[in-house]
Image (tube, rainbow, N blue to C red; front, top):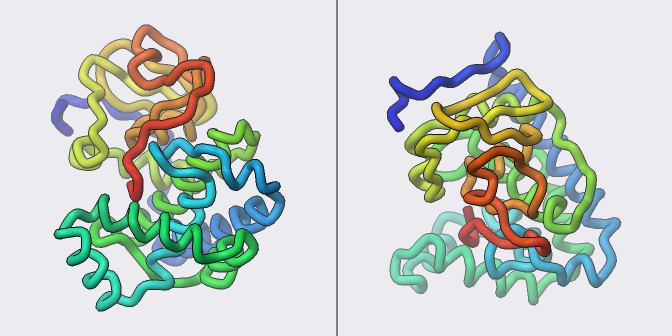
Length: 234
């Protein structure tokens, strides 16, 4: 699916300023820190939507960019023989074991305004990193947290073929249609769901059964236990 042929619709909104996106990032980190502080030990040990990671590894990964300097990150990347996914998986597992649950939550709260961004995508990508990993936790746990619509709009407006390819998402013949926001993307049979669930689809996650509706729902859903999907670190 090319950008030119995709049928992409959003409600008429003004693109968020950098300052506005950074404020969203800070709010998201503080809210997720509060949520993490409220989890019990069983929930910390539960699987997330990131394949092979518990909630604990996801939480550890979310603060990696704050805690590792560029030289330290390059050293870890070299240890992983240049594989970003292998590196992030190793570091997340190491740090999940090394830090307390209170410490993992505090890393997010204490670095709410940290200017870290992924290698590509700037502050919108940083917001996506926080929002999607937060959903990796809450959706897998069956938590009813709803991501504020303004944050979702920033991220949904950034859905592009290049990003879908990076996350291994095949939307051939599928049109994503949000039930709760004026947004759609793609061409073909409609796949209905909450905007935040469709965002997870665009980030390569498989969702618990019954969260999506449409002929293609099974392509993007797991069984009744409903956990798994995304590669670690994405």
